[in-house]
Length: 355
Image (cartoon, rainbow, N blue to C red):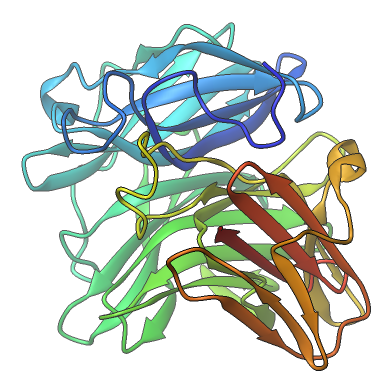
């Protein structure tokens, strides 16, 4: 299959999960309902595809099924990591209202077996809440770390909770890694090492809005110390961005398009993955710009993209236009059917819209 935005042949797709390079391929897992074009008719699965160039994709069999007591209500979002040539998937397992963390592993990157000791993190700590999900696992400073998204209802804060492990299976709670005031909870975190710094990203959910928080900084004594922050991924029709590092040291961001606010927009309410973007930090600025592998797909104009005296406007049918005001040094875009991605000033800001 050749697409500029990956989507499965059939079935619902949302959050990217388990983005990883393994066995000569880039693997993209994702939240998936294989039998329905809209969500909530069945418990969440993990769909699976792989690619070598982010243009040609091979759709693989479903990787995770909700077939255990601890995940019977869904195999929800998570991440992937490679240890000793074994691919591990960490996911939020849901049983009724209980959210915990489970792991599955694979030697070939296609067939997965669930760990017999699941769940490996059984419940939320006092710093969190029942909104306890989306494990983000990475290796740094000689240890494995797991960042969990949650919220503190008493303090009205979104929080990221940190765990550490020596072997990926036994986890110890370390405390609150980061928090945001006046928010309900966080979702879909990413935590990766980028050269001598760390990238930390999360979707922060407030009462009537959400934002994509991307920060670069230091990681000391179990706390993330932000040195620069940006909401690079401005949406409005993208969500749940996940970042991973490939074997070349590139921090790659992929998001879900078009997000939740579009039910009924098309006959098949099926989403897709965004273009893969490399996240960089240079001259004090965070950017996310499409990888060289896909840059030949970009153009500098589209009928729906109208330049104005002080910025641009993305025209949409039956929905509010997207209006940008600010200085433009460069503008790139990609049109794929009814989706338009716009990259401002080399990826200082990204706007994705359903047209």
